[in-house]
Length: 326
Image (spheres, rainbow, N blue to C red):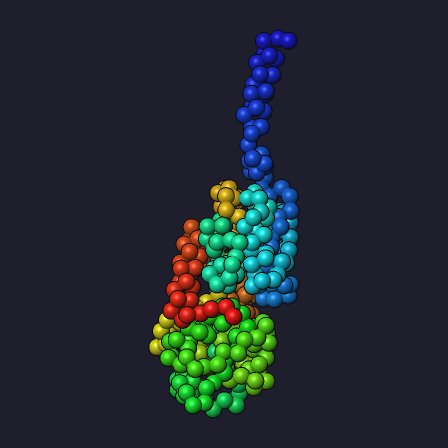
């Protein structure tokens, strides 16, 4: 072997030894993702979160020239799928498309096997959505002020339906804020039955997602107020809680992308940058508008801070209302 061949061999051998101990993601860092990425949605297929996740991740796949495969892992208020991602290998090939309830509220009120912020590496919040107060069509009120006045009558308690942990806690906070602890919180198994209870007149009113928009437009329920920074595009005549002067009710849900804690920063940055591009696409924005989802832009750091702040706030609400899981 010549001196030149010997030097080339030793250089190659040294390079191989230097990289042998690196984690798998480092070998393919420049090519990420170079295999299908599993994106867990911790809810059943067909819901609004699932629809948004499939739309966003399909566009991500087109941009990053890879396959982002949605895997619905519903159950236990989103904790099953969320917990699975928290325990997954932090290599960028298992991600979580989650909502505020499962991410920040469930760990506060249930025994979850993950923490809202510490168990994850947030990528980006994609959009936010508020809540609308709907009342049965024959309830003798036409405004939030009239509803609150009626709700404060202890002699004839109103009933309010809730079908999720978040709606349940928002309901308890509302009772606390308007000083009407006698309001009857009728709990249903899901937000769809919760809304149908108002439509059928089984209960008097409810805090609902904007999935109720068609019921409102068809006159099957009344919309009295929205919890949003600005009025909803679907019903611009309905005032916000801020406009009405109702304090301490600044709640919203969101959808966003997260990864397991320890996922390489380079992977998080690549995902975040491409999410930004997706959220500027006209067809994506048009689809979100159908659900009154408001697109947002956050850095991974900002998203992490918001998740921690939200978790802290839920803890305070639970303490203030004396909320307990029955």
